[in-house]
Image: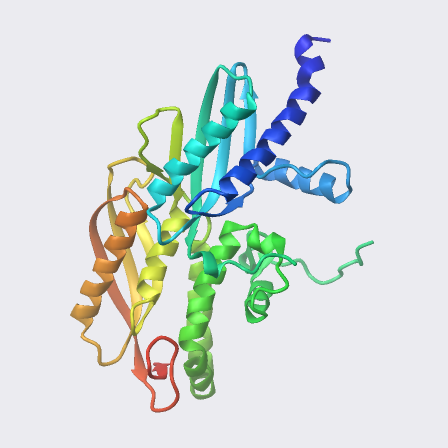
Length: 130
Length: 211
């Protein structure tokens, strides 16, 4: 068994915590109306089933992936129609980098991807769950 | 345990991101309550709800009246419109947004941009967009793009003026939210609404009927 395989569960746990922290940070970012699940479709479906069966702790919506010394972070957001979306996306990317740095994600290089999948007025969203 | 569903499986043509369109319509009718995380967590469903809400508010009364007069024609028209919207809300290509750091990639989906165009048109008095599309390599920064929109317009409006207003609004919203290099915005009016004589239509001050 390689060292990498021994470290894998711990890294996965750390990345899930990072994903949750990034989701929270993005939800508090000015101009971001909502955060969508950015995980690949199959992975998201498996996670949803596992969470439903209470086999896994709820994961964040931001996709965190490691390859060698590279940390890739992908976020999908809804942006406020009253704010220029390029500004909001740039702000969101800054928040992602800042959060990754604060949590010490342990990567040589960080690639950040933020995609606006919806532009809407905040009031158009459904009321929050009770 | 989930009860066994013995109904026929839904065709993909009746789904938006896995959610039946009838379920989305019912959800909108209920004022999007109680909140459904499966629907609200889907950008495609949210885009569909946005468009459906505007169509419904604008045309509910007139569509009901027209349905009594010309049920087949009206049903075909509204079905076609909703089918077009269903196709438009699918993510599509990523439209790049520039950033000085090459390790930071920002983008807006084509579906989100189409949603902006549709919003800009539908918010214009007497206009309901039939379809929106982008011609060009939208996923390449700086590539020339032609925006094409078709619209139904209330009878009596100056079509040239409406087309100019529509172009201005589309250019403004795409300029604000994307970095598309739009070279032209082609507007086609493919249907006309006749002003009605009773009630009030949403957003127009008069009830409208489409023929």
